[in-house]
Image 1 (cartoon, rainbow, N blue to C red):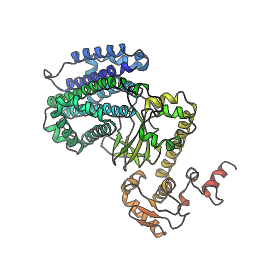
Image 2: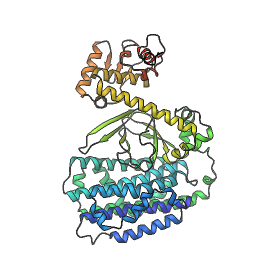
Image 3: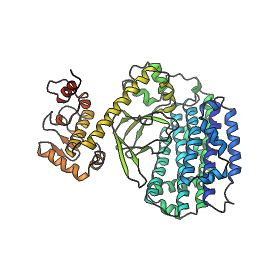
Image 4: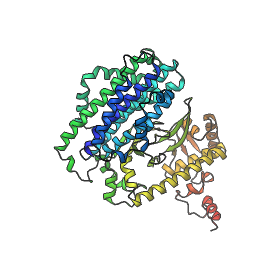
Length: 511
């Protein structure tokens, strides 16, 4: 398995380059300055053969659609029958995603890498995926000869995601890994600086100007060369790193060797509802390659349509998940708080993320290898039961949320939100602190910001003290009218004789 990692990454690099060439052949009549698709397809086939030779489980680990699509991709008529976006999706879903997930699995289970090195390299590979999508998104705009608002939003998200992954790589990589990556990229240092400037301009909303400065062929060549150089530096660095680590103690480490931040939070992690009842050996194996990462406000952890390689628990802070439509409008699905986890991708390893996950405040995330976690889920009964319970609980909360935003008045929605916030973070007698902007809360509750402000004014008339982002209840039962049976179970007064939601739940059960 260790020998399979580098060939798998080389195959992924070849497929990403091939996708770009297939797309630009769609758009340009004169492709004399662009490598031919047939030449690149032949090189990709060589990488496939090499990857198969170094991985005895290659045919078992990849889905059948990969091999079927790999055989069909040489058909020029088939490629021409796709629209630009459809061809991207075809390549991503059928060819690149399976190899991407295979590479991440090799990384997560590699015994010659430390957990921090594994986490850093996973983010580096993800940044290359975003860079490829940015290249192809630009080609679509050139082809249409028009920059729409949705294009600007999409390009901004891709540039931000790429920069975020690079920042996460730098935060996790040890000094040796950072140094060797820099050394491998040194020959293209000027290009790297230019690429970083382009990414930041696009992130800040200037994609139209960036594209106007270059022809389509120049845009493609520059980004294609940059992606190829970065893949080359990654593979060179990893070969050097693996050889160096073999001479040390990494290969002989036991399952007890975890990231230092994980060790410091060990007692708290054991108490998380997903891991209760697990033996120490099992939990340490599950957390192999896991990291606790500090993230800034408005950090995109993954975007809608991203490949998903990590399972994320929001350890501290607040985040939101949302979907974006073709016009760039957001629809918030969930607000996640401390110790909440993302269960929505259901461990479908080859499916892209169905929504965007972005932090609302500064915080920390516990990031685990999705490949490792899914493997343990298939073999560990306690872990599977914990995840089933967590999924059921989350579903109940989502149903309650849907009921609130569709059937309740604005006042009831705000009261429901405040009591949830109080149960989540509040202490008896302490003020409720709104952890993020009121406009975002209003969007989450499907009401207008001015309506939210008007409802807060009504609460103020009833004795609530409201000072900026802090709300103090006039007495401990002031929000009980907005409670429901699911929320009541989390309340310290749930068994009190006058708890209406609990009485209603018992009456419904015939108790």
